Image (cartoon, rainbow, N blue to C red; front, side):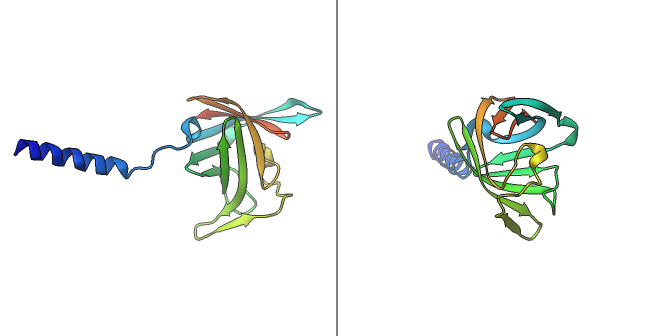
Length: 149
């Protein structure tokens, strides 16, 4: 009887654990706060803007990034589909998030997120630093510095 109870308990435990989604992006997954944006001018990132007080956050999970804390022209949340591989992070599709729908941003001149280091409706970053506490992304437009929150 005890043997059957142990087998039943182990099977139940395995079934319960197998239903949870595991982080698929490693250290990239989580809640990140933008602490600084360094804008590029003439190949140098010399225009430094402290951002910690702005309370801009990126929430990264599965294949979606939610950027909150800055207006995208309509709401305070922008959603981004992304591709992450090695030292590259590409924001491939952006959406204005409303409570009842998401509107895709198709205009390449989209500039509502420029203050956060994103100058278009797509972005291509090199990951300079990514560990359990810090992340630093670099594009031709800006370098974005984050802390894990």
